[in-house]
Length: 323
Image 1 (cartoon, rainbow, N blue to C red):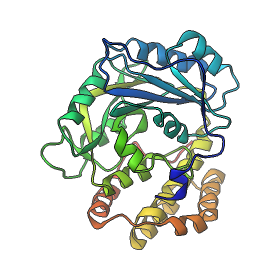
Image 2 (tube, rainbow, N blue to C red):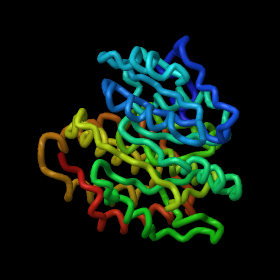
Image 3 (cartoon, rainbow, N blue to C red):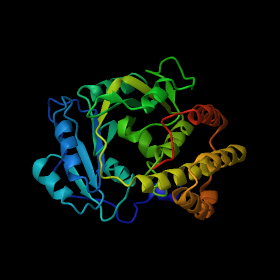
């Protein structure tokens, strides 16, 4: 893996003295939950309240990405059992890597500070993984609150065009949604975790491809449910810039030349023609030197899945670079 995946990044989180994330004897003991957060104190506290009510009693790890709104202090007061890691800077998705360093359960579930797992889903996910040694990750159904409606991306997961072995618990996937996925802890570590280069925004695609390259299957599991109450504290345009940049970088990091060119050209023709898109392409171009240095094309069997997904994603109504 690239060196960035193996070394501890600058500004890495330091475990706080408070909180041990110890499970209770009545808990399931197979799944830990990792949450990253920054300046969303109230949303995070609501999520931690919901996680504390789960019958599985999972160990919970929170990486606070240098919040300035008193998030860490509030968590320490209200949820002393949570293992709190305080980052010296905003690590983005790499905050999950820092938390997984401390995980001791065979499986790790991610959720965002504005989402939470439905009671029983973590135990169900652990059972699915226990029974299927070749399954690396399961992604659940996402319900958007407060209306209780399905996220539009769920239809795409449910109708994934990928073929997979019959033992999968649901359709095979070529990527996953971090806030709604349970992974094998060892598989996550072996694949290098989330890339510090990508930071945050579409960061799952690269990790998913690396997991598939290692031989793991990814699947949608409709038995699992995650609730998402979208936070209003978000930089929509900034996330679009980074997400588009990361999509371009992924193509050049893992796809054969024709596929990388095709994806780049498709995005150039279809994204909004505005300053945000121009900035994203500029940032992607500026990163080409390291991208080419670290380029490792996915094996043919994985590339075949990615080509199949290309066609489906271009028809998707849930994937739009807007905002």
